[in-house]
Amino acid sequence: MRALDKLVRRWQLKAMEHIDTAALLKAGNRRVLERFQRVARDVPAYAAILNAHGVSAGGIRTLDDFTRLCPVIEKQDIFGAYPIDQLCVGGHLGSLAGVLTSSGQGGRFAFGLSTHRQARRAAKAIELALELSFGTDRYSTLLINALPMGVRFSCSTVTIAETSVREDMVCALVEQFAPHHQQTILVTDPLFCKRLLDQGRDRGLDWGRFKVHVVLGEETFGEAFRDYVVRGLGQDPDGWTAGSAISSMGVGELGLNLFFETTDTVRLRQRAHRQPEALRPAIGDWQGRVPPLLFVYDPLRIFVEVIEPDPSGFGALTISSLDPDSMLPLIRYRTGDRARLLDTATVARTLSDIGGVHLNVPRLPMIAVVGRASDHLPDGRPLLDIKDALYVRHDIADRLSGAFRIEHEDTGCCIHVQLSAGVENGGPEFASALDACLPKPNSGDRDRIKIWSHADFPFGQTLDYERKFNYLDAPRRP
Image (cartoon, rainbow, N blue to C red; front, side):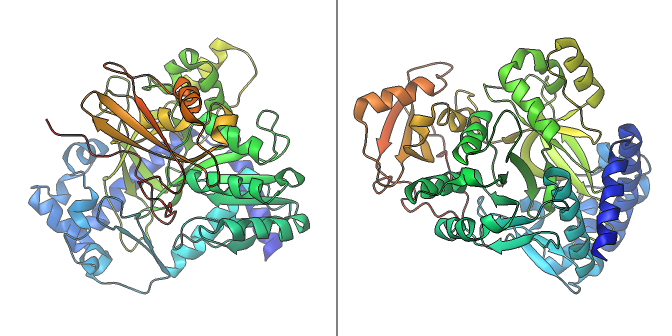
């Protein structure tokens, strides 16, 4: 059976090389209309939402009808507003294989439900994604899931170790089991990944002895951070001869790995990092220094819209689930992220115009994601620019935990930065060196930098990695 599964994956990957992107998108467009009608008929809460908005399901016949008339829904519109069974097909909870919760960062939890059939299909999809990215059918692989507890997945082609956010467990597993596998994949989030690097350095772990890949979820990151991680793991950030670091984006209530980087999209983003003006015609006029993450996605799994776009095409990311077996389907669900749909033909033309090293353009549809809509400072600077600036100089990054908090003051912003455990405060000279790496305010006074020891950092001293870290305080009201 496993040999047959390998053959199927090989065929699927070969078929991906010949995908007609436009045809695939048209098929997704047809599927969303069919899916909408079923949800409108079979999900009591959604029928009530349509009724409250004066929308008749019978009047939705075309994609234009769907995008013009169907309401956009958000977490607070459904989770907590309706009993969980009323959000399900048929108005009741069926037999479940699992429940995935959102982070609850906004004070309200959302839930993603999966049936046993969906769980089996999800495992097949993960196996295909791992083969596409890391060749797991060809190389014996240790996969360490260091995401917070509750975020789990199944895969029959790798050795899975579940550690949650225990850096000591991760390092012990690498030391004992990585030598017996041809490669290791760490699945974690950026902030905890920094903690892993610190722990490895403290215990003298030679990551470079092994081929180590990292899959990063939960939050966005920039190319300075990617370079820091790959070099910190003793891999090759430029030649792609060893391990790599890629991003995967999911939405708890919709599923894992909805959007994902590939080798091609990472190289494209690296080019955009080095030549931003040359790539803006393809990616859009993003705000700030750090280019958006460039993902691909399966348009037969999700229908993706970007609504209320700005002049550059960046707007609110909205997703409709297309899985016919979904027990809790969501239609036109606004995730809270900002994104821009990309035209692969335009990307290809732009790359041709600028020349240089040849880069492949993915066949799957592409999307540029800049992060959460709320992740910006009062003067408009993206939070991602601050995050990435901490890793521009590796000697500075080595001394930081990666956590910081930005407070809004009457004369600008105070950036509170936490040092790694055991690191001495470098005084004004260190603060000045860090400040030189940070993007300057668009107007007003200079930022104030305050360096805290690890123990004295007043914004979550113990860094509870089970929860998303809050980098921004609420703006002061006048």
